[in-house]
Length: 90
Image 1 (cartoon, one colour):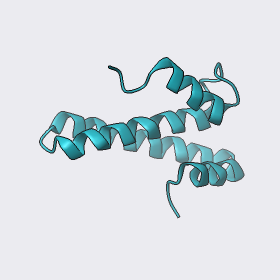
Image 2 (cartoon, helix red, strand yellow; image 1 turned 90 degrees about the vertical axis):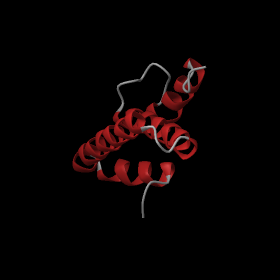
Image 3 (tube, helix red, strand yellow; image 1 turned 90 degrees about the horizontal axis):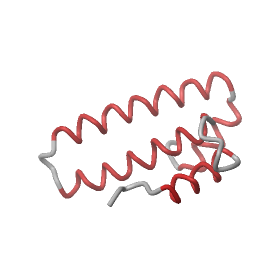
Image 4 (cartoon, helix red, strand yellow; image 1 turned 135 degrees about the horizontal axis):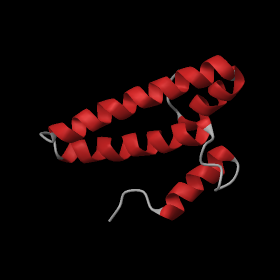
């Protein structure tokens, strides 16, 4: 069973991108990566020695960091609203 179904992705894109077809929205991309990070984190809590998943998690965290940095530079109010909505920091 996939961890992200089409319906779940559509929900994420609707909530953060405005509509389900708006998959290129930076906010929607960040929300999708965040969902993948939480899913892999839960997996790693049960499987502590899964090093390939740990590496994938670190790559996703770096990708989210780069996307958030881009959003912060180009839309500070949107950045603040997104980290508040996702509960990321501060």
